[in-house]
Length: 110
Image (cartoon, rainbow, N blue to C red; front, side):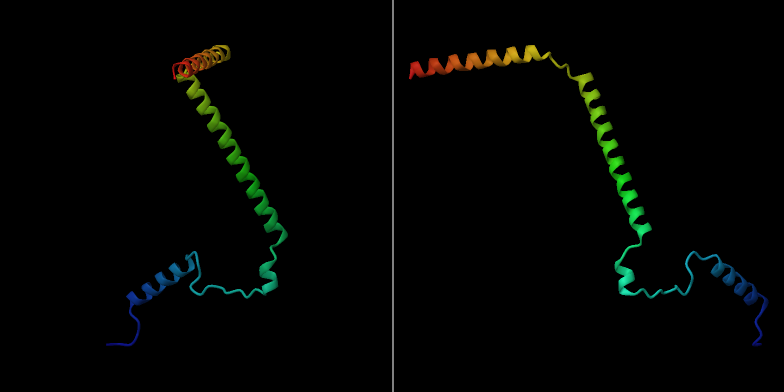
């Protein structure tokens, strides 16, 4: 056996170097040393970015909530017939009067 690299090993080495160049993360990650003070205090641009993202999330949730209620209202109103308010109040008064009369009859009976 010869100690010289063969053609296959050269192409293999070239393929490995191409793969290493195209990696998304380096083989030896860069380690940064932050001081505790710099780590605790967020940068102004990070704070502004965070506030903007939170505001956008609240707007999206509000719009989602409003449109969900609107869709539910339209869906329910198209299926369930809603009586007028006067009919509902008259029915409630009649039910109250019937209940009161029955209570009076019961007290006279007992």
